[in-house]
Length: 124
Image 1 (cartoon, rainbow, N blue to C red):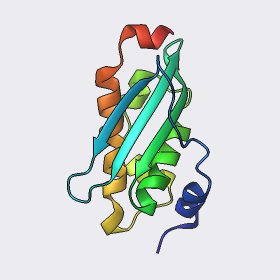
Image 2: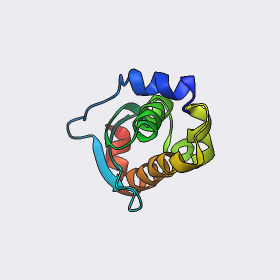
Image 3: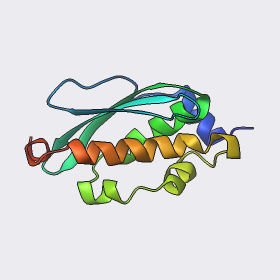
Image 4: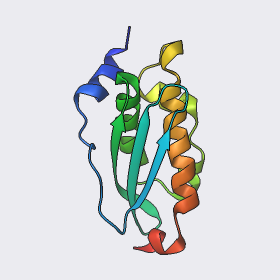
């Protein structure tokens, strides 16, 4: 059974979509279940000004992606680097054991986003 907070994020995907360049875009896939997350983020003055997601997957992965994009706003690269699967899980009110991959997918996306983010992106 999913938490009410998770279901709220799933039902209200206000950050669903994609940002145009110069936003940074990454795609990650969970090889075990096949869930896919495309994460885009636009940086201004060294922090995330805006982020969007496109997720193909289970309810938990969609909800976690929504929660992630809300959390990202206003965060610096150092703050993004500190994200953990537990923090994502907490943001959605917990995950069932079979759904913990949703949090890992979000962390993988942030890690890849940071690898692809250049100083140019951070000052746009």
